Length: 333
Image 1 (tube, rainbow, N blue to C red):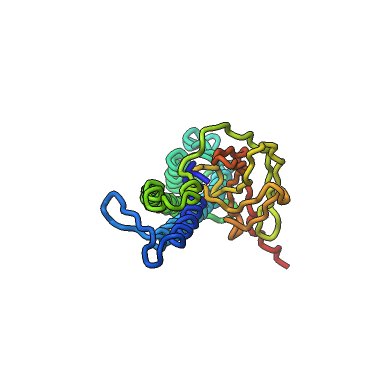
Image 2 (cartoon, rainbow, N blue to C red):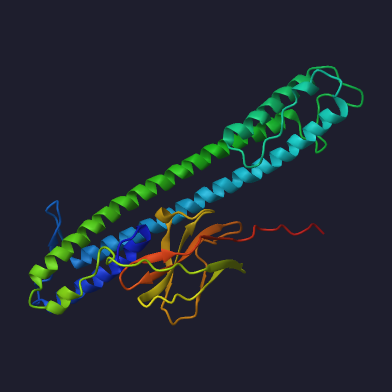
């Protein structure tokens, strides 16, 4: 293994930890290999394993934060859809009863469900204001004021729903900030791990010169110069009740070491958030089945299958998106 991005740190650290244990076993009892970091702080193999576990926990924290952000976005989308339905009811009343009034020319245009916060809420605010003015004016024939929508929604209720949407946007921004903080903590741990592994590679040849087999099998920190493998085609589907099933084509690269399934919570693949979910040897059945990220109805995960060579070079498939269906409420009897 070698460092190619955030997802590669844990597998690479596993190799270094295992090699470190072999070095300790080869050295005289009571004299384990201890490296000295740039800040003049010593680190043992046990401390390095603890660092790996801390990094693994922080990667899991990022996935949890992404899940919380995804939930917050889902709440926003549900509220936007409900508000759009009421917006359509309001404009239908304008079309039916207010065409020959001064209010009709001031009717706002409906925003799209995919519009951002400002562009989505501005027409809703205009609707609230127009609705309030209508309630204060003469009622056209067939209309009773204050105006209620066909679903009995009042202007004050709609205004409260718009306000609730704004609070939901604020909550989503708070969750996004938590994701950013979790990434920053992870990056600090990765920088520390990289420094330790680099120093380890410099220390082993000096400390283990009597054991050339250990020197020659030092784990790599960067891929060996060479070719990049061809990416394989892969596809993913949801498998009830809460799994992703991924199948992929075979790689014919002579240096093939394994296949890795990487991914993260979310609706669009980003290398900075991906973690290694599972690994298959070349002869294993070409599929992955995992419950990763699909912890609740509506959850989404972005996935890729990577071809990993013995040189550490790699190539990922096209990204795949799997979504667990949203919960469906039973019909009333």
